[in-house]
Length: 204
Image (tube, rainbow, N blue to C red):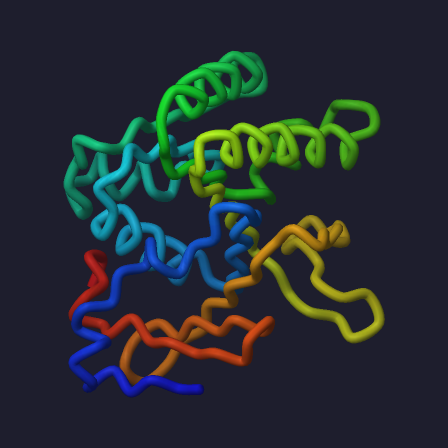
């Protein structure tokens, strides 16, 4: 199913309604601008508190430069390798108190910041499962962004690290691509496609 961006339904597109509460909402992209456009629209659409773990500092950069406004419902966390676990703890505490949207931006950045740790893959997966468990308790949403490329033999590969993305059954995939009218959102699980028109993307 493809919805034309000129339809009235597209002008009322609210990205929060696309998210699943009981699944990890995995957002895949090949260009960081696609992810930034999607996240900025999501933040604009929701009234929930957004707990934003900004591991690649792209969104933070847009806010600091004034390209994106400072939203009152967004709490930005900009971790280093020394402060990461403390910030995750803060996110877990806040998310346990009320319904929120937790954004992990990005999985690539999480691997990079933990690259000196042993059992790196298990550590990253443990963090994701912990965040997913807290989100499920309060009917919150967990959004995990990943810059990827697809290899037929190996599946989804994190770019540029080359690490294979471990897929779980409890995830909803949202693939972001460029389209003539804006950002095309593909959801392989139900063969659905939507378009965020350029005029609705805060970065454009």
